[in-house]
Image (cartoon, rainbow, N blue to C red; front, side, top):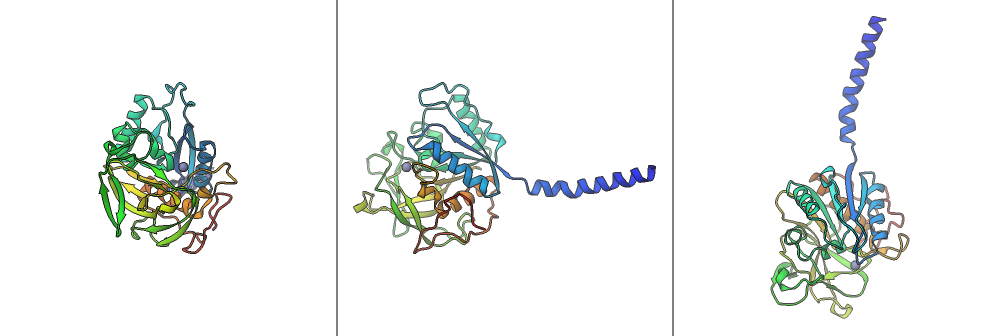
Length: 306
Ligand code: ZN
């Protein structure tokens, strides 16, 4: 019996030794989606973001919602530092000062942040937040917020012309142009592809501390755009933090009718950007259903095609 117990103990020990590192390796990345107020359809967008992240099998996400606009925010205090990546889907009332401090502490100690669509409208008067997003729009932004940033002949121009920050033309399908084929978030993706029907943010302003511009798009004047090549997807230069800013993804009326977020290009960038924010690497395989320079591609059910 003693001998049997000894063998059993050895076997159990071996099983533990073999399975423990494997379990750690296969741990899902923890994402926190922050939502609850927005001039957009946040009840759709935050659910869509969760479906995109969780259906990939790479992430498990929690959602934290603030009080409604004008409500009591004093209990809004997410534990940012328990997450590998924080996804901002929030444009609304100020957070409590303690929550702002906790968010800055998380970001400045090397946290990962995805700035999604109208999250870059938020907190126009919070100087440090504007450095975290690099470019923002609306909510009273002007030349005091920083220059306009756009491309001429593929090179960045910082333009201090006075005027409001943030606008967009009519919603349409549009081509995306790669600006850094080597960055892990976009490596292997097409240089040009057609994004599903969406807004294209333009005339954005801010400290413009873009680290790597990944994709831009041309805001056609006849569609109400700026007539410039505009930055749409980029990383931000902010200390040790890994920040991925994606201006795409205007939410539709429902999860079923949500072309900008059902676009396989949007979903791929969201997943690759979020993985990079969480780990500094991108290990997920390139998808087979990515849009091409001739046609759009959609994942109606927010699930990558294997
Ligand atoms: Zn929008």
